[in-house]
Image (tube, rainbow, N blue to C red):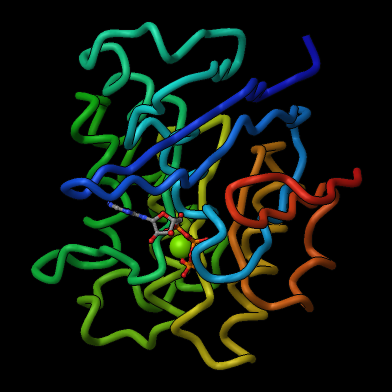
Length: 227
Ligand SMILES: Nc1ncnc2c1ncn2[C@@H]1O[C@H](COP(=O)(O)OP(=O)(O)OP(=O)(O)O)[C@@H](O)[C@H]1O
Ligand SMILES: [Mg+2]
């Protein structure tokens, strides 16, 4: 099976009191293993909603999602948690690092949670921080790092359990253009060296160049897609 993710007729409706918003409307597409996917579209078009359903943070109202041949909709919460920790990596706009932990500790935390061997995960965390260009900052706290450096720590953390997919919702939205470029190139480098599938959201049309698959959303529907 070539596909990493298959999404079929995905629908998500938010209800706030009597008001219903159809954030996703029968969305269907496939993502091949090893792709870098750019999810584009205006504010409110459904990008975050789509990424939240695919990354098992939320559940849709209708439709199916297959990740690495597993039908994830039918899974129990416990199995979904395991899949999140073992198979998926997350990079958020606001970095989401733990302020009291060093860069190194932030990176190996998800491996510690899996009960992995501590010598091995500390070594791996150091290697990942070197890969993202932070070999001299491993003992820095998040507040002692720039925004771009914090986001690169977050990318290293997302890679610690050898995920098959990384989800990045506007990873460069809080960064200046030079740091943003470094972060996007770091993601691209991770894809090239490990084959990890990457799905990123961006507002910046210029970021299209980092993707080899583009999905455009408008009012919860796919308007264009080319691979
Ligand atoms: N928790 C929620 N409850 C109710 N409505 C929501 C919720 N989250 C999102 N929505 C609505 O769903 C639609 C899609 O929102 P979504 O956050 O997915 O857009 P987006 O494309 O990520 O936008 P942005 O570029 O601003 O981040 C919007 O109309 C939004 O108001
Ligand atoms: Mg969003």
